[in-house]
Structures are given as structure tokens and as C-alpha cells.
Amino acid sequence: MRKLTVSLLASAMSLAAAQAFAADAVALQLKWVTQGQFAGYYVAADKGFYEEENLDVTIKPGGPDIAPEQVIAGGGADVIVDWMGGALAAREKGVGLVNIAQPFAKAGMELVCPKDGPIKTEADFKGHTLGVWFFGNEYPFYAWMNKLGLPTEGGADGVTVLKQSFDVQPLIQKQADCISVMTYNEYWQLIDAGYKPEDLTVFNYSAMGNDLMEDGLYAMEDKLKDPAFADKMVRFVRASMKGWKYAVENPDEAAEIVMDNGGQDENHQKRMVGEVAKLIGDGKLETALYDRTAKALLDQKIITKEPQGAWTHDITDKAL
Image (cartoon, rainbow, N blue to C red):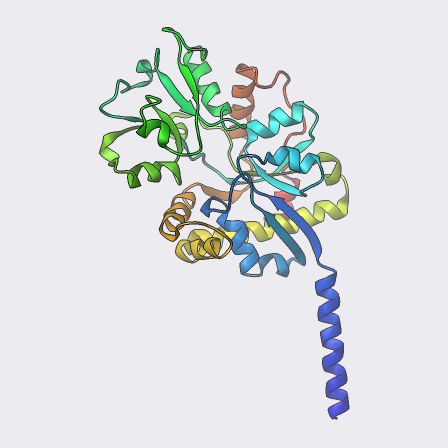
């Protein structure tokens, strides 16, 4: 009996090892550094949701010198987190990115100005300096300025654009009259720096109907034609959205998981996950928001042709 038990145990261990060995590898490239903005993916890994889908997922943090579009084009990732503006601009340049899921149903981008400054409404922008990040983050801002009919080359009839650092120093040091922030990140850096909510005039892109799609999941068009790869993405999206659901329902625990993976400042991460939770949807791309995003990019001539095949519901229809 003992030999049989040992034999069965050995067989079970061999099977488990074989299954683990057979797990499908997926490399996910994030748009930015490890933080609560990406909590759902870290939670999915930590809670075994990827493992349940027979996936071995490597999460690759981003940074100021990492362009997700270039990483995936060079074969360094299977799927990336990206904003639609950057993805469509890259697609027009020959990088066949396709949106396969849209975890962020709302945008988190805002423009904030001190209330004791010269800008109270959009009508006050003219002749002033506004800060925005680049590397694909500037597209919503430029689309908004185009909508307002404001040139972005400076001068009395337009606005001067400050290429903003990835912090709030341009406002603190009065290099700009307004700066760009995310609801879940830099806004709270301003609060931590001593500003009070009542000290700030906030222009929220979503509230104004100027939001363009943020933090979607993108894979390469040619790889999606392979049924095995497409199935892998179905399982990846399903596990990722399970991770996001858990993060939304358990933000403090999700923030701790982010910290375990290299996040900085636990209180900031907890606050960030709580704010990001307000932006998360069911993972399916909303076509009306896509159409508005594409139109804004066309109007601004960020892209010159109507995109074709830039998104699909095939993955989320099967995953969700």
C-alpha cells in the first residue's frame, strides 16, 4: 500500500509539474511604473487567477524611457497597456496594434489651476502656459485645444505648451498656469504638497466630454490571427478582469499587493487604487467612446486616415 501511495503521489507531482511547465507564457508591458494604476494585473498574478487559466504571466513595468508600442513591435511583449491615442498613432505608422479589451471605462486625466491664478474657465486659457506630458499622453490635451480653436504655438491668441515633467513641480514652481494630473496620482501629489481641493480649479476631461480612451489592452494584429494566441488572450483578459474586480472590491489589499511588487508609498498606493476603482468598467470597449477618440485624433491630424481594424470585441465576447 505504501508503494502504491508513493507511486500515486509521484505521479500526481509529475502531472502537476507537467501542467506548470505547460503553462502558456504571456508578457505584459505596462505603460508606467509599478503602481495602483495597474493593480488588477498584479492582483490577478498574486491571487492565482492567471495560473487558473494556465498562464505564466510576466508583468513588465514601464517608465519614462519605455514606449509600450515599441516594446511590442520589437517582440518584447505579447500585450501592452496603452492609451488609444498612442496606439492609433503607432498603428498608422505600421505597428498593427488592436485593442482587445478596455478595463478603464473612464479617463482619469485632468487639468488643474490654482484658484488664485489667472485661469477660471476655458475662456481664460488664451495667452497662458499649460503643462502636459508627452510620449503619447499629450493627444487628449491637443484634441481639447483644437476643439476650443486655440493654437498651441504660443502667442496672444493661443496657448504656450509646457512639456511637463512627470510630477507637479511646474505648478509649484509657477512654470505653468495649469498642469496636467491624473485623478489617481498627481492630483493627490498636489494635495500632499499643501494645496487644498478648494484651492484648485479642476477641468476633468471625462466630465467635459473631452476624454479619450486610456489604459486599454492591445495585442498585435498578425498574432491575433493565430487561434492559439487569440485563445491565450481570451484567458488573459478573463483573468485580468477578475483581478480588477477583486482590486475594486478590496482596494487596500490590492495596494499591498502592488507594494509587494515594487510600488512606492503605501498610503499613496491605497489612495490610488481607490481612485482607479472609479474608472474601471467591465472590460469591453465602448464603441461610442472609440469613435469620439478617433474623431478627435483625426481632427487634430494626429492621425490622417480613418483607422480600420483597430479594435475587436472577439476577445472580450469570449472572455467575459
